[in-house]
Length: 379
Image 1 (cartoon, helix red, strand yellow):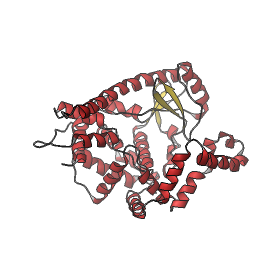
Image 2 (cartoon, helix red, strand yellow):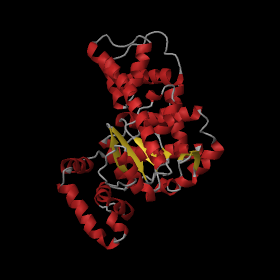
Image 3 (spheres, one colour):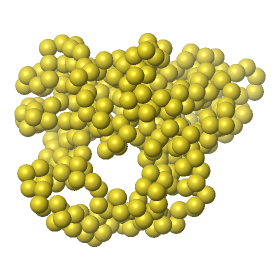
Image 4 (cartoon, one colour):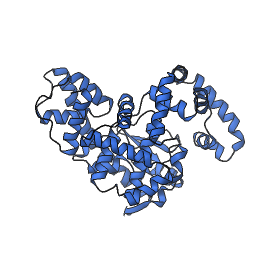
């Protein structure tokens, strides 16, 4: 049994309630921990191993698994208490808000700690951003005040809040519908809203597609998808029209097939095997090799990809440089500033390393990535 097969049997046990295979269940605990950690699954593997008395006798690797489990439980308590604080602050300011992603789906898991998150995502109207910032800082949050493409970051006690003023991904295939999120919400309580079930699922698939074309999306979104399916979110007559608008039906069917392989024990197809290799190699958010290959495919060449990173479109620049909203004439100067800050700024080593890695990318890797993206219907 391969390390990958062992991990998925453990995830089936934890998430789906499936018993582990009978008979020999031997595995390399170090390789298992590395793979599980690479995909932020070590806490789930640890719990399954512990319940089945399979934790390694090696003290070091046993402690690593147990620590991953304890940190997931501790992190969930942090996230839950901080989310409550955020919601109370926004309610106090009479600011409509929509919890997103993990803040929503965590409650559907067998235990909330099973669904780890690196941050909290909340959506508000852009016009409310200044008021929300004041409400949050009044209750102890800090911020550098920098607006990114779709959010501003806040921090409280080691917890990161991404306060979104849009949920677009700077990806033309999906941004048109994602920009209409406020047309697809329903009220929960006072100022708190939620995405309708079909739009939440669409948003989930769209976000998966964004990470997929950026180098990989990890295992976690597939667990989320299985959970959503079991909770009645995958109603075809509601979700398919939304996916069709963004040409995501092929991708949706493909990720469902791989979900069935990983969590239902279905047989692989050639496409699911290719997807599995791409995703498992990339980790939680993909790796640079996948990312650079996918970028070269999307932009139809290495040079065009590097050019697009150096000189992004105006809609991205006006978020990075808010002055462009009123003074478009400054665009050339903003491009010059961005170019030199990337080339000689504090992140220059990382930028130059990525430039070199992109130029040295294996043509076969680019070709196989292009075939995969075409097969799953991603532009």
